[in-house]
Amino acid sequence: MSSDEDDYMNFDFSNDLSQPESYQKKRQRILNEQMQKSYIKPKKVKLQEDLNESLALPLPPENKGFKLLSKMGYKPGMSLGKQSDAIVEPIGFTLKSDKQGIGLIDNTVTERVESIESKRLKEKLLKEKQSKFVSTMSNRYEERQLIEDLEKLRNAAMDMDEKHDVKRNDFWPPLPVVKKDFGDDDYSPYVVEEEENEFENKSIYEQFELVNDYIRSKYYYCIWCGIVYNDNRDLKDNCPGDSRDDHDEED
Picture 1 (cartoon, one colour):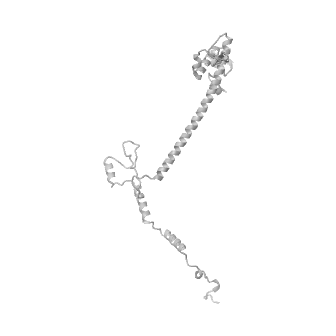
Picture 2 (cartoon, one colour):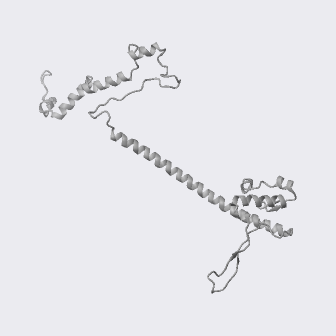
Picture 3 (cartoon, helix red, strand yellow):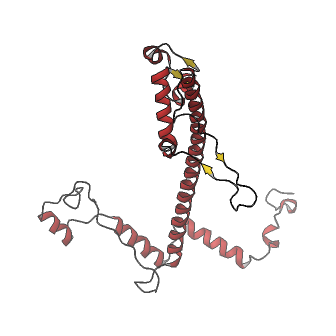
């Protein structure tokens, strides 16, 4: 067999047997070719892009507004106004692309803004509530500690006074309630006899300060140290302070 003759064993039948191109494949092929040849954008898209580019550009020197500003001493880059921190560029604007009225508010944007503000307000209220709760619990704990310390101070004042033959002191713990029984026939089975005491009408903090100053200045005693010091100098030199916090820091 001569080399000029076609070899039927190597003959390619694919071109002859190929199926006709479908519409979708043809359309996709055309689109790909257009993309490769710098696909021309729709007129509407091109106009919108040109508009955005022109709005982003600064005012040209030929602009009437720019000429008026230049006559008043304005130069590009200067702030617009008397203050140095005023805006540099004019206030921008948004073009309407819909057919709704100018005064009509976009409900979608409004709802989104209200949702964000509502979320921030809820978070703020939650933080304030948590902070208030922590503060309240802390105050209650400090008040309980103060009541315990005041009770210790009053008992210590009574013990020290009794050792020095003091008959009675308002700083001592209050006396038990005295009751008088009038029998079963009386409507009120007892009456309370209680002497008026101005000290009991004071606040817990005032009572604490008065009793604490009393036993420290008179007996040089500290309830947190549990020690009776020799004198006032010994108390000041060796006692950490006149409050529970001073002793907690020392520990």
